[in-house]
Image (cartoon, rainbow, N blue to C red; front, top):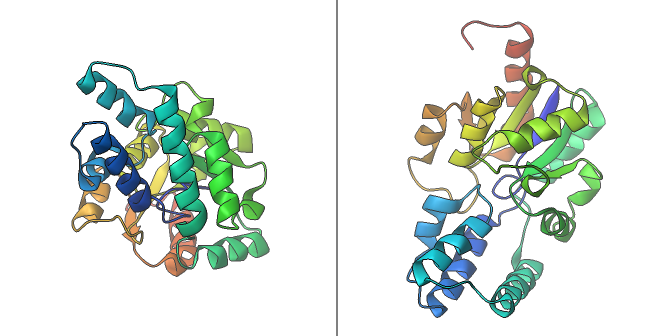
Length: 231
């Protein structure tokens, strides 16, 4: 079986930091928006969609200089503040040692930034070449493209995969790909009631403590292999 990890909010605790920086820079442009509004509408989706919406609101394209300054500032803050999700290195190490399942990353983040963030948090070594981005496919989440792309590259059919996601867009993308998904609720940006949203949109289970994931994978993968009708 292939375990497909989302990155932001599952492997690294980045979503809240990113939303705060984006909100600050958007407001400086004259576009009023809060970090909470960004979290509610753009988590799990490429950041370019936020900036395209802001361009439409302002009626003018954002300058390359602005975007370069924004990306540089965000990268500097990530370099100083970005952290792993607590317990995730232990989980990846266990999966690596057990060799029962293959695993990879499939994220909405642009590939070069995705790799940089994994390196910043000392997680890249677990994945190597098995890092896939929505920038490599036609459509972002909630479309299924990046998950199907990752599964194909790793040599697995959708029914042989299990996705770990934190975002509604990601859970919807998993459902569209006909891949089972589990919702993670342990990142700093998660709000009350989010778990109910994830299960209502297709997550077979939600959990908060990353260290619980190996046992959940064992149970869910076992049910999938048995083709359990109650699962």
